[in-house]
Length: 103
Figure 1 (cartoon, one colour):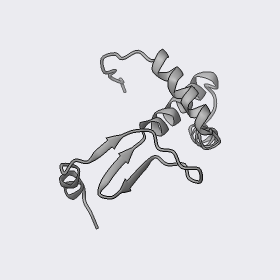
Figure 2 (cartoon, helix red, strand yellow):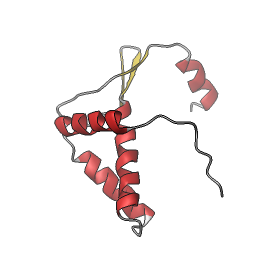
Figure 3 (cartoon, one colour):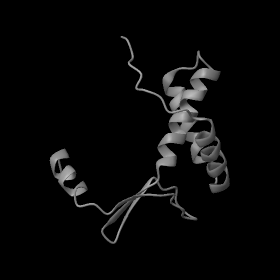
Figure 4 (spheres, rainbow, N blue to C red):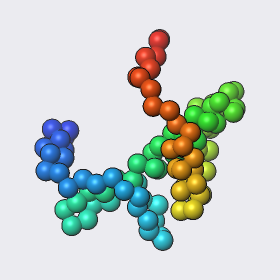
């Protein structure tokens, strides 16, 4: 069984790449192949984006329903739709300082 310390050491070896991953049969968030790790950031960002947009559009919708629907919508996206959403996100987003959430 691995722990975070072991995995941190493994990460220090490098060979970690951020890129779009395409597979005709599988929906990939990441891939390990020939000693390299490939991460597609679009999946988690798009799922989070859809999730938060649903909260904004449907403020009374419960958290579990929003999570389920966001995953369903993302799972139904083909590569063309992902590229469209990713491009729009990159164009619209604004980078800003961290936001502190008050409890």
